[in-house]
Every structure is written in structure tokens, then in C-alpha cells.
Amino acid sequence: MPLSRDQVRHVAMLARIGLEPDDEDFYAEQLSGILGHIDRLQQSRLRDDEPRRSLTQEEALANAPAPVDGFFRVPAIQEEA
Image (cartoon, rainbow, N blue to C red; front, top):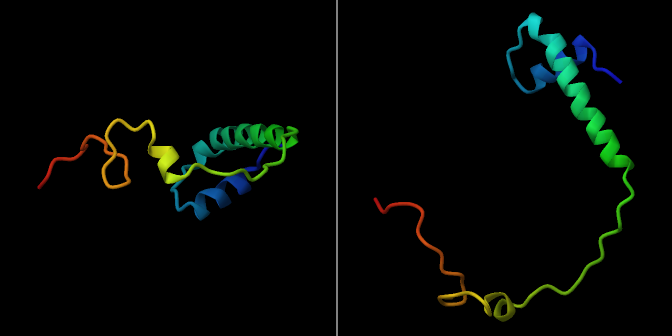
């Protein structure tokens, strides 16, 4: 179901996005497409999630190349100040 220009303006207002009147049709089409994809995903039959035992800290770190004090050691990604 395509969105109306009023609905697009309402969404833009909620998102606090300034929208030019010339763009309303474009965004109505884009948002309608996204909502169509979501509708299809909701119709998919998915299995129910079943809780399972998670890894212990020991099991999680078993294959870590260099664990430190019970944590994964990873290379620094930021320089020190």
C-alpha cells in the first residue's frame, strides 16, 4: 500500500527532517518499498527461538590467541592521548 504525501510529511516531522514538497513523491515511493519488504519478511515462517546453554568464559577463551585476565586481547584501534 503506497504511502500518501501526508504520511511522508508526518514521518519527516517525527524524524525532524526538513523535506521539500518536490521530494515527497520520491520518499513516498522509497518508504512504500521498504514497508513492502518488511511485510514480506513478516510473512516468512521462521522457527521459534529456543534457549540453549551459552559458552562459559573458559570455553569462549579456549581458542583465543592471547587472553588476558579472562578477556580477549585485541589490537588497539585508537592512539593514546
